[in-house]
Image (cartoon, rainbow, N blue to C red; front, side):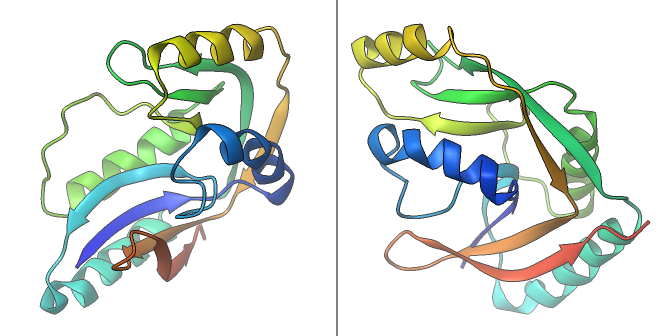
Length: 169
């Protein structure tokens, strides 16, 4: 089964991002707006409980934090993805690094850059047009992060929460 690990921003941030994702993100209906902590990976059934225990330990070692989204950015030309950038991403990077060290390694073709996707899989022309418009907007959004989720992928490609881990330090 395929799993992933993510955090969800608060509803007011999700609502704003979804207003763009409806149009620019073909994965809009598959998962709510999220920040990926661990990319999609395969985990055999017999290893799920061990992974859950490891993630619970990581949650106990970290305290809730607030993140700020401050501008629109993109990954072009590597990927045709537009996203909301995070002002200080160190707490998310810490979680990502702890999770990566705790679970079996997976190939990572790119450096980890925490972000909240607005649009993806766009044509080059559309990407430049949308980015050109959105980069002129000021984004001053905050969201408290007090949990992360182990997600699993269903046969139709959508994602569902397997377990939630509260940050408790």
